Length: 190
Image (cartoon, rainbow, N blue to C red; front, top):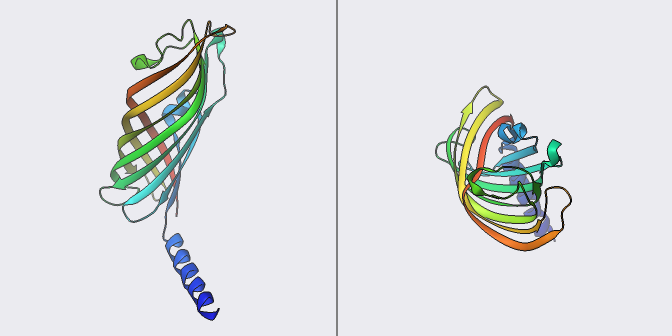
């Protein structure tokens, strides 16, 4: 029993030491902000060159002219920093998933080409690789730019018109291309 208590004390001591040495950053993606999508990300230092970025995004809005781009998304990303974490170049591997309800919107790259006449509601999941760079602005503030490419599988129900149409069909769409774009303002908590 005493050896178990000693072992637990040693484990908690090392956990405390490693946690105090970790950095945590919170951030917002200014590109998502420009599309009225609420977003928040937390990045946690794991080792001197590895971090884990956890991003959540939510847009509950319908717009004028029956435009609708309601969605939520979660996007965790493991990052390898080429120099030191939270500074300079990084490579990332991300997963993504969420739900959407879109209609009467024009999307780039033919992601959903017929949303002008139809509404789509469904869910998606995927994965991708990212490259980014982070600039230190001060001791606590940074700016980051990143771009990710990957694969997304979307499942949807298609409706007749953007607002109130009847159900038309079920479908799936495979997408290969940009899965992430970010210009993020970051606050580092030490």
